[in-house]
Amino acid sequence: MIVMQMVDVETYGTDYVKVTWSPDMAGDTQTAQIAKALTPLGFDRVILSRCDSESAITWGVKLGIHNFQGRFLDAMTAAVTMAQCPKAAACTLPQCNRRHGVIAGNPRAECGDNDMLDLFPSLKAIRL
Image 1: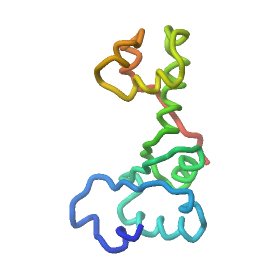
Image 2: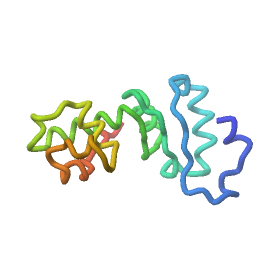
Image 3: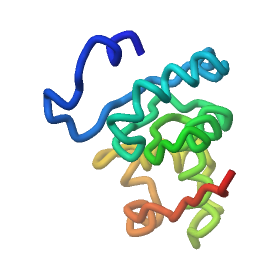
């Protein structure tokens, strides 16, 4: 967040700003500083990356962030896909997760339902 204090992101006409999650951001003082730095930009233009836990997503949702990246979200996407896929019995969660992460090659070819693989399942957060 030090960079956010020194750089006016509006000067560069950025569409989004990516903030890398760290558990130490969850403290009250840090959260307040981050909120102050991001408020002028707008939380709908923030991507919270490296979300490897539910606490990262929960923190971001409480702050007003709408865009997330990370292994936790990837695993959730694979789990929801498998719950809806008629060929899920032939896969494991790590296999489905891996296949979602590629656009070509062996992992993708091993999928029994590439149409399902190309669909991004609807994920919704509960309102906190």
